[in-house]
Picture 1: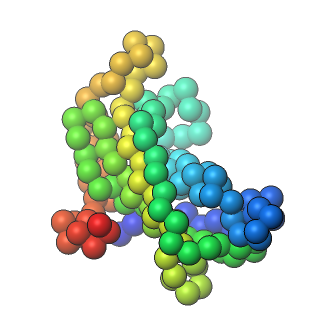
Picture 2 (picture 1 turned 90 degrees about the vertical axis):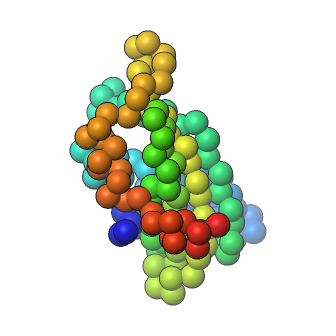
Length: 142
């Protein structure tokens, strides 16, 4: 299955005293990729129309990234449940394809008025399926 790709160029302000991207900024990259995926799924920039809330986020750091480096964040869905779905992000150097980091997030379909989770609608479920990793791809990610 093809991934949704978001390209990011590392800004100077995202680096730290050690000269590499500070670990906290990888979560900003994951957020940016997640937002671009939501836009691809038909959700606009009016967040008041969104029904998503982040339940968890983690990131494993494999290699360092630096100021001026171009990164591609490949985004796929790894699991679709009744009320939530899981996203896997692979952050790669755009030129060499070297793996920089792997991020995972769990997103809940959420009603902000009632403050409760809700079942994922069938149309969204079908759209998420387009980015679903195969069993073989998921085994490779582990």
